[in-house]
Length: 374
Ligand SMILES: *Cc1c(COP(=O)(O)O)cnc(C)c1O
Image (cartoon, rainbow, N blue to C red; front, side, top):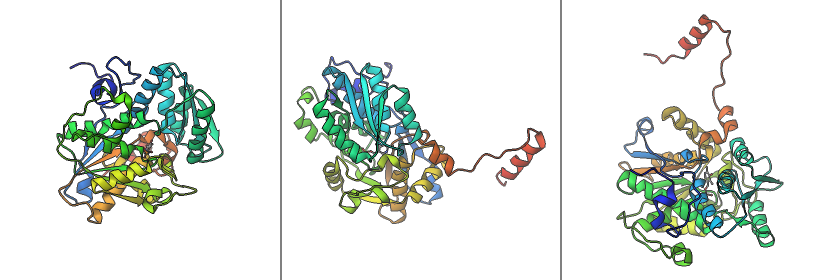
């Protein structure tokens, strides 16, 4: 088998890139689809539950899938700089891919509301980090305004190439399962990812999608029929930032899941259309439910995802309990980002280290106290 060199090379025939276009890639994609074996037993449900662990992408989130496409096309068009507004992961990915491409990167982030890991990535990769006294939605508006007056290329999800790159997650799920799941659950912030998943699944059954019709860059693009049906799409939002669930924008979104702390999603209409077409629904989870499931997943399955990602599983567990998802179902949850992105939240809710003298008896006492009962 040839060396894996990223999703553009792998899915070139299904993406808006020319055969000769050189991909700006960090070998993103090809993330594992991990079967959750302990959780279904714990909640006493006969289901096949999988995690598509997108936290294992090069910068630790699914944003890399979109960024490889956006930066590849930006470089091809001769861009010298890219810009984005971000709750964190977009800026981390933009900074890394800009570094790889040798172009400048500007990121607008909400002051004080970005997880430490993400901020460190944007800084380390050498982007210019602009903190604004405002939220993500303010940043998004400013990015669009400044792109009209300065030579910067927007790489937020209003950039159609982002969604195109992100749709490849659906191809990988189908390849790994050998079929589509019955349900596919994911967190919804700006709603670009749920839109992208749906485009990927739709193209997999041979459908022509809107982006395909609209984008002239799609000339070489082929659809490949690799599935017979599409899954039911489940989108989950945090209670303090649930504009789609409520049906109206949220002025001051608040949630511990900072990656989905968004009050007015860019891809709102497309997400609602996707959900509706799939026969799915949107629902909400509280911060408490999110953190509980983040920890449960880490401690029962050994998978550490960030709070925003845990909402996909929190929502699924809740809807299983409510009977909205039936037993016997095959369910995939996209775990959008890695838990290391947000160490503060993880440390705050975990058992703190015990401090003892550097002596054998002290260590023995701790071990005896914590050994599982036989
Ligand atoms: C960006 C992001 C989301 C939200 O995705 P949208 O496309 O904005 O709906 C969820 N989780 C993580 C970890 C993210 O980085």
